Length: 561
Image (cartoon, rainbow, N blue to C red):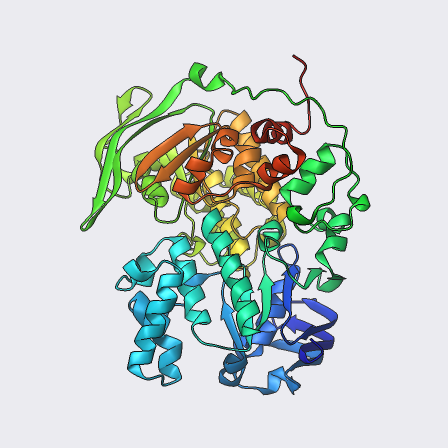
């Protein structure tokens, strides 16, 4: 692993539209055959590092650079984007930007067509890779019609099918359900081992990536490299929390149990932990909260059914949302979660009935329904219609005739909470994908609906903005708002919801407390979820997983009796 394949030497880069450099004096070498994880909060410069090596900079986003960036010894900025593409294959976070073909099969074959691969070999490789990532049944579908997770898998195969020496993944797990995310990390790990490719992963979800070993972790913030070394040393330090990165769940739990992590030589994987004798608290038996039953029913869903021409997506679904609840809707990609959200918001016509405070609202117009249920879509590009950030967030208020002074006050307040106040006069086109997501959330939050329904609200968010957003949603909940979130983030479900609806193939298979869902192997398997690391830690410590999960959820508090 001595051959240098990518090298930044005193490298500084400033976008044309920016006053300050995004990257500042970067010195970093990646060697042939390494697997490197690059982490950092939103706006840290990690995506710019990726754009520099895959040719997006300077071919698409130009700017001023100093120092050197070498790929296989050649100055990267002297190569054409075609030359760069032969060396670096990229999976983008925003998958819609990556699709070329009219069908999934065409999209998977695109790189092979460019390489003039013979048709029989091309067909065989497409079938092989589609089988590996469970896409065979989707080969004739349009990529744009797929769920977020399915899109992610299509873009992943589109890159993997072409055998480049460097694979770059820009947040590959952002839209995947937990089990599919785990499978993706397994696949990346296997490819890395079998093919010997140099693998670079840019990802917020540190714990999920460390499910399989990496050679190095690079922590970047404010355009400078703060850490470049083994994951174990990084996890033992305070750098993650100081720079807005969420540490693995099992480490947080160990801290709550009073363990000094500096004592442990290996922290990156639970399997490698050498735990000292711990004086463990007497954990209470799990007690499910009974508050829900006493809360007022807000929305009753009765026998909800919806079908596309060739497929029944929602199957006789019934449940009740009570006033002031925090609910997670979880399940594998394609289970019907986003379709359920569209049905609740009247974007599709359904069979069955919706009862709002005792009265049917099935005949609502879309506008009437939006005043009851505010919906934040998974893909921000599908919601944005204005050029400037302030105008986008203010649009709904303006359409409702709210006074200008009130608009200014409410928009500024929401922008502050969503981490966007500094960008209020920016064009949306200058934002990252994660920042665009926050704009769309702000545009709904400012309208103050009874139910706030969010599809993957924290996807692509760093821990600081994730926490700010969720704490804000908690504040809204405490003020009486009902929060419903479609999510693949099991830690979000543990930390910020009281109840989980688990969907499989258009049906609810579980309606229970999050801790009960995440410690039930049968539910996890059916729904493509996975055990949290607390579950695995409980096994190592010979504790009840449900009790330890509750211990974590209560911040380490132990109750008597």
